[in-house]
Image (cartoon, rainbow, N blue to C red; front, top):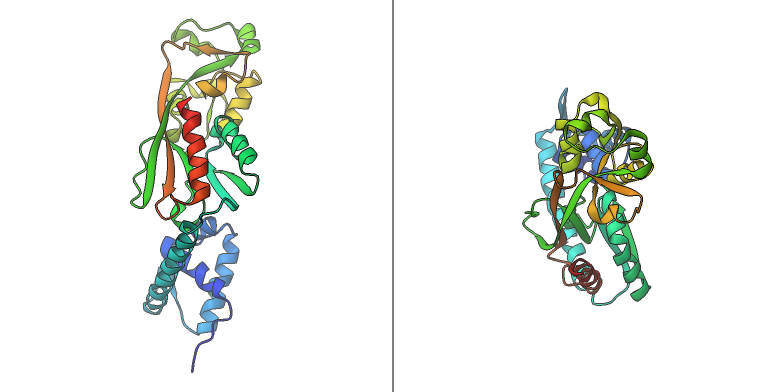
Length: 294
């Protein structure tokens, strides 16, 4: 008797569970609730009248039947990704949408480039995705990424160095007038600090420094986005790290021990090789390079 798949989305969801091993991680990747993932797996197993997963306390592992199904699903997924990338690579017109991904702290730096692009190419819908997680360019989640840190080393990605940016500690004049301006590292013990939440700090060098050198009771605000930290510093809530170029946008901010404390990060323009030459990706990339050359 032939098997009829009534909902291909069930296979896609189950495929993510097979790849990632848990309902939670699959749900995060798909942007749905874990109960939705469980419901679709159960529905698929009922439709096939076969068990696809072994349920364990630590997650889900494939049965022999599941492994056969997902081997075929993986081939289909790869073919669809290649088709998507081929379509994008063939795009020689400046139209449609262009997805740019970066972290929230960079939007102040990239805003002039985005404004210029929208002015020059109003027929292209520019979407900026602010996310601390690295979106998959090879899955079509974004066309261009602007990243900080070590050179991206994914095999199919093209990484171009844009700039090296400097960051330091800053505080609002109002805060310093209230507490006094620290003149030495020792005097930092008398101040309030802004840092990041656990799991986020290791990717932001000045947050990592604060957590390593400042007692926990002095960290009076923790955030999960660098843009929130910028606003908190600009509101006079304490001393915190900020990119030098962003700090220049706030005239009432003053550097704190600028000659002693600074951090440098490399900035990269990242594209996937299949869409690298498309017209709209190249148009935005050129504006981005011009901006950082200035």
